Length: 168
Image (cartoon, rainbow, N blue to C red; front, side):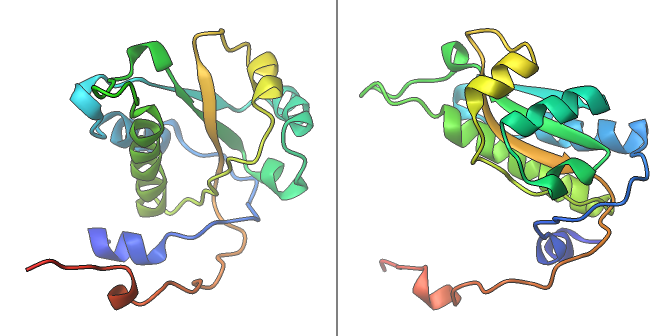
């Protein structure tokens, strides 16, 4: 599958098979995330892979949608704020850095025939407690990872001319 086909096929999957994901696929996916660019190459990113069913059950206090827990694993993308590059006005690019890495991860998962669903609407304090995340690390994004049971239809996207402003 070429790059543009991967982008076209990516979906937010909300129903997963219980089939395990092989370590080789997981390694390639996480390596794709590792290769993502970051501001000043600071790489202020950390990933936690959760396969343990008991831990996954405890995460329901952070995000309660049952479909989320049908995947064989959950990945938590974390930010390391102390490592982030800061612009001269003090703004960090930590959210951008983690988002780029997460985008690499979800596109790599799609290329491997796996599904994901980017989740930000969770309770970070619960995730920190359940996953034993230290104070200097911030959980930003969760995604289930597994083989899709159902592949959703494509969703509406604005036409290109509505999102481009070109200055000549």
